[in-house]
Image (cartoon, rainbow, N blue to C red; front, side, top):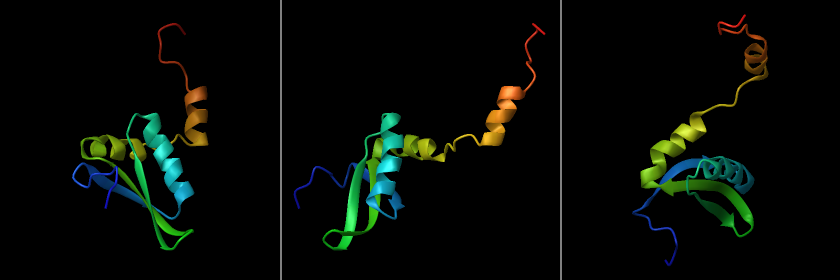
Length: 90
């Protein structure tokens, strides 16, 4: 099997329900300079059952950290915007 993905240097990170969901996660990782490889699994050509995300082994810790960071909720953003200043210039 000739592939640009060497099985010794890439590690499985996450399964996604489809290619689009995998691309969203891959975009987050690429934005943080993490190389990504997406492998689609299809029982029938054209019908993707799931997509698997792989990253280089030396990036696995960073990739898990990137995906673990949840975006701030609206309530958190509101609190940050309205929180009293802790600076001395009140």
